[in-house]
Amino acid sequence: MKKEQQIYISIGLGVIVFVFLYFNFLLNPINKDISEKKKKIKETMEQIEQAKRESLLLEEFKVKSQILEVEVKELQEKLPKSKDIPDLIRRLSKNYDKFGIRISNFSPTPVNTTASTEYDEVPYNLNYTANYHSLAHFFTDIGQEKRILAVRDLTINAQAGSDKKTTIGGSFYLIAYMSKGKR
Image 1 (cartoon, rainbow, N blue to C red):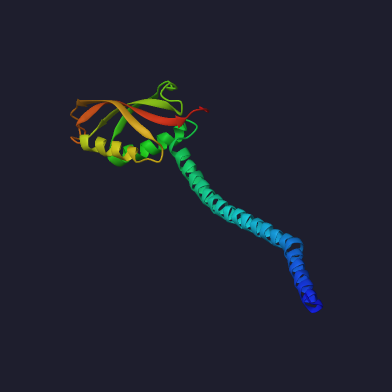
Image 2: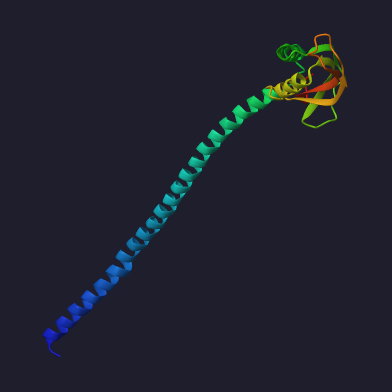
């Protein structure tokens, strides 16, 4: 081999060694670092997407919570925490007059606390005289009240009134409901 060939071979080997060392010791660690950073960026982006989804869920839960709070307030009007007898009498007397019903007895009876774990029943015994259809309209009207009311143990007796509009008389229990707790 000639000297010139030896120089070319040694230069070629030097270039090969340089390229090997460059890729192995300089470029490989940088590529590893780049791939690790890309992996971290991908994980961070996934965490950001998850956080965005959770924030949307949080907003949805806030809206649902506000809706439920409004519903709770409406239900508390329907199922008060106290007997509130004066308001009940005002509402009922307005309806008595509206339908021409005469109440001869309005007497509270003991509160039934065993009906449910969520509410108590406050029964009132009422004696009435009325027209059959007026009584039915009255029951329909109190069923549409804001407060939850029910009628039980209705008795109807034929009765001829002096004004001929009063055809029946009898008694019933009006049940007003209230949530457990304060009486």
